[in-house]
Image (cartoon, rainbow, N blue to C red):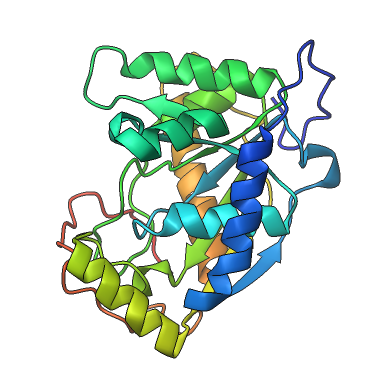
Length: 263
C-alpha cells in the first residue's frame, strides 16, 4: 500500500445522498451563528471523492457538526463511522441512516462488522471518516490520545490512503456533558463571543512499508496516524501547546491513554 495510491475506478461508485449534501450545506450556512470556522489544508484532488479515509481527532460532542461544515468547504462528502447509540435515537438515527453513515456497535459481538462495512464502502469509492482515538479525548492537555487500531485495519483492508483532519475550538461551543442546560448555555455564549474553530486537512500518512497481517503492523500504523494528527493539530493551536485556554468544567480527566509524544 502506498501513501497516495492512484485509485482505480470501483465497480460500484457510492454517491452521497442529496439529503446528506443538504445537511452539509445547512451546517456550513448556520455555523457562523455560533463560531467562525477557518479551514486550511486540503486532500489531493484525485482523492476528493474517494476512495479515502479521513482520520479526525475528537474533542467535543460538537465535532460532527464542525466536520460536516468543513468537509462541505472542501467539497468532500464523507460517510462517518459513528456509535450505534446515535442510530438508536428516534430522530437522529433516521438522519444518520438517510445520510449513509456507518454504525459502530461498540462493546458488542458485532462491532467487527462495522470494519467490513466501512472497508467495502471505501472500496466502492466512498470517503469514510473515523475517529482513531475511539472516544472524545480526556487528556487535560487535549492532545490526541493513543489510538485504537480500527483506522489502521481499515486502511489495510481497503488499501486507501489516510489523511489526518485536526480540529480545534469546538470544545468552546458544546460541553462534554451534553445536558440541555449546558448546551443552551454553551450556544448562548458562543453566539455572543463567536469563538474561532480551526480545521486542518494534513498530509497523507505514509503506511507503505507496513505489511498487513504482520504482527505489530496495525499498532505501528495506528501510531503513525496519531502522530500525523498530532502534527496537524499543532499547526492550528500554536499558542495553546501546553493546554487549552478554555476549560470545560464538565470534562473528566483521564491520562491513562496519553500518547507518548506531545508538542
